[in-house]
Length: 343
Image (cartoon, rainbow, N blue to C red; front, side, top):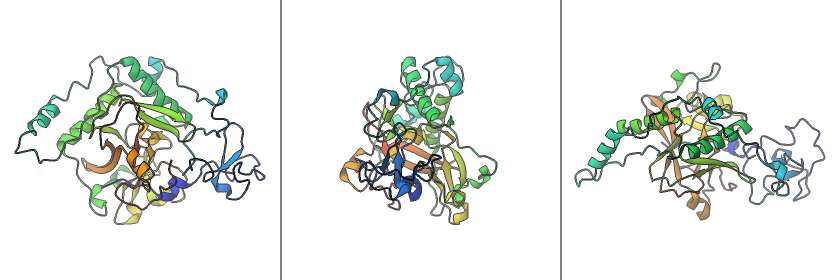
């Protein structure tokens, strides 16, 4: 089953004229000169000038995560993001890395052997297996990759988490039952579960996916591949606090992800990454209404039953080159949510 998000959460501005503490009643859009549609009027974090989301080029679907600067201020030297210190001890503490000298990415011998056996004519039609990501070999490079994610998380006021979290007052872990899924949920195979667990183990050792978080004045924080990534590689799991969908109907967050679409709507669950999250929060979506937008898609977002728990994975759907930005379709095989204004 394919992950989904709710439309209004993708297109509603979180920093608008109505939500600011200052008096911006007379603020007008610098492009069209109108002060109407205050909830769609985005304010520059440097000069406080207003711009309608739909008047920008390209059009923005929602307020970018983190700080946003207008076209004039985006080139100003004072508008750069405060970088997380490139100090190993600080990064180890930030990501709660387990100190160990033994690399984890040399472990999956059983996975590799099983994959090689499937090359015969008899087994060639079997389902292709997911691959664990391959970390960058250079420790200094991995340090820069983690620092880039720490920078984005710090700028957005979130702490790092690589697991689904269950907070008192929100949905309990017992509510996350794939059996409640409306049309059923595909079960992640044992081999693919081993690959996912390997990815988790590598992260705990500080061997992160080969990804770099960069800041774009239009898209906000976004993610680029820092080395070539093979098709079917597990990029990351989408994580955050788990809550009931009905409790988030009026939430204006721009990164809420469907976790469980239950036959009983009151039991549907979503992932809320605003307080605890990983790099998945900063991967952007495509405009699936245009051929150009569809060409950018290099990830698929899929929901799986993993050991009796619904989980959301982002997986490479083709080979990805170094420096290529990562994009996935929020709708995937469905067209329930508007993406025509996506960059």
